[in-house]
Image (cartoon, rainbow, N blue to C red):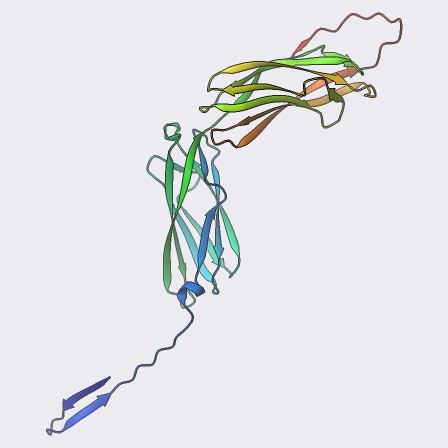
Length: 272
């Protein structure tokens, strides 16, 4: 840039200034942070909503003294923490996972919400940079499947015998469970199913229950003792995602009766 002026003696003078600029690679390439959630579904009415937020440095420079601040709508709450996490430095290509617990009230079932994530960090020259991200979540109601009035008959079975487990499945949640099925499994391999391997119940609305009864046969080569079998309840939520819940119970197997021996029949045992 040139600048002219007149000296004290009336002579015209001219000054020239040159400014040099150093061009570096784009700041978007040097500093690029990606943020994503492990899942995008929150369960209303549940205190078990843990969302893992993944923060990844996709740039070419170290992100220094990174801080993550999360803002949620006023009708939600972050549990166990304030809304700010100090992450520290992240090298290029590295990733950090931040677990966050969010409580959503039951009245928000069926809605969608957005949370705002503010990322603050220092560049290589110590200047502070800040970026905002938004993540959307779908709200569904929780399903709490419980086993009630469970009993087994006979309470003690012989190898080769058939025993029956009866009870009811109850939905203590706030959302309807669909495609509910009940089956019996054994990791120890002591049983084999009969004609029906599972019982199909269908849909269970909140507060409702349905009975079931399943019979299985103890294998011929099972030694006397106490064994654990598992009642498995499989169901789908309102988005069609399948879940399952397992209930272990103890069964007793006794030695086979000798031919000609007389023994009183065993009664059924109420488990809970």
